[in-house]
Image (tube, rainbow, N blue to C red; front, side, top):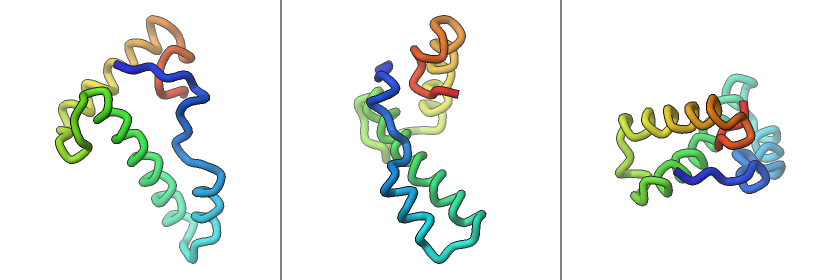
Length: 85
């Protein structure tokens, strides 16, 4: 699994966030929009790790990827994992 540095991954850019803020959407719709944009970026990263297209990803592969990232976080620290939470 690829473990890019934190500076390499930005799940939502300032421009994207500003575009969402400017959209004529409710607060909950804006939240879902931000989540969807971020999820798209994460799915692309997961697919790249598996060397397949996003369309080929299965839910099992996504779960496995999160398990691996979680294990890295537990064993090597938050900064070594892809997701920094």
